[in-house]
Image (cartoon, rainbow, N blue to C red; front, side, top):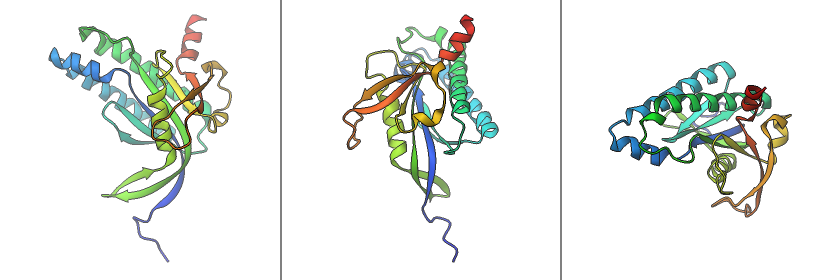
Length: 211
């Protein structure tokens, strides 16, 4: 018997959530000077890069959140390729920000860049208004990790917090200078001291440049 098209199904996914550091401060600064188009152009440049990469690599651009995105990757996605893509995204953002936004700001925030959270697991896929929507713990964790990356007081720009259970699937990440972390994730049961790993997504690029 064929199930209805809108019947919920369970799928396995790797979830990456990221957003812009200091986006509210940047938006307010540009709005006051009448140069908000610079931020729009930056977001469009990131969108174009994501669209091209999704077609080439085979991941899903799930949701735009105003100053960032949620991306979904197949569970078998190669960890080295995934991290290399995120590293390239960071380089693109840094270049576009410096070219299109930085010089138009009255005051450049101390924290500028992208910050990331990553988790993986089962998601409930449902069709709502003819569009696929996803519900699940992995999305919540990825978004909380992305928000919590700055909790240690350091600059979160171009850094990724990944859950401990997903971390081994990424393969050899030595080039990204992994560090063990603990975070308190808001509104997540049983995560008072959530253990995760922090990666510096620009580290391989900086090492190659220094060489």
